[in-house]
Amino acid sequence: MTWNLQWLSEQQREVKRTEQDYTILKQIFLTYEPDILAFQEVDSAASLHRIIPNDQYQIFMSSRSKNKEDSFNGANQFTGFAVKKHLTVKNHPDITTLSSPAIALGRKQHYPQKLRYGSAITVSFNQHDIIVVNVHLKSGCFTPKQLKKNRKKSCRTLNFQRTLLQQWIKQQQMNKQPFILVGDFNHRISFNSTNNTTNFFSSNNKQSFLKWLTHNVKGNCLTKKIKNKKLYYRRYKELIDHGFSSEHFNITSIQQLPYSFEQVSTYQLSDHCPIIFNLSFAPVVAS
Image 1 (tube, rainbow, N blue to C red):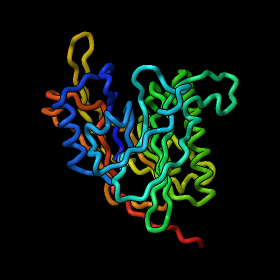
Image 2 (image 1 turned 60 degrees about the vertical axis):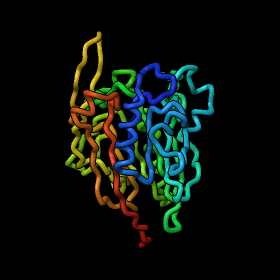
Image 3 (image 1 turned 90 degrees about the horizontal axis):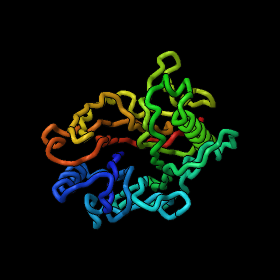
């Protein structure tokens, strides 16, 4: 499961929640009890434990949470994982370059930023190590047209992050390393039917082996927002939360889990609906 929890924080600054709100979030989570939750916008393990059973899950916070240079004094939006305790898991180095991608790529128009790391873990399954990466990319560049024009600062940053992720993907493919890449891409990724690949990750460097797990998932996420003391509802029909994987995985089922109008109108949940993946692992036999 991947789920952006919209400023889940004990500080209650950006988004304020009641005990009832946390109870509903916990009920949603426990309805599905995923083996792995890739979360975004969580300030601390303590805040996450309000909806994730501590006795059933182990928490892996992004290493950014321990790096003061890349964190803010107030509430932060960290990525990370909650993993069922029966699974064998260990930390994997985060993709820290996503924080200031222009600097990482040595670009002249660089500007320092404090963006989210791509948090990572290694999960052992049937004597194979699987790398799982969870990203929360730059917001503000939502359409393929904007990304292609590359005029907005947010689009330039997202393009830099995309380049870094493509480099990471290429390295895993060269090593024949099984991987899953999920999270909040903050972008409505489109499908290019001419070469059967996404417009987000190009088909260069044999990217055809990259599986876009969510390309058939229909978006239907109802959210609410209070602006100028007025309440607005919005239904998002296109995904910005996505999943990709190496060729080692087959899809059993994938779906977005929308909230009901009663849930959204009564409680403060999140402006993202969770997406749950059910995948099967099939080691690739070398030809």
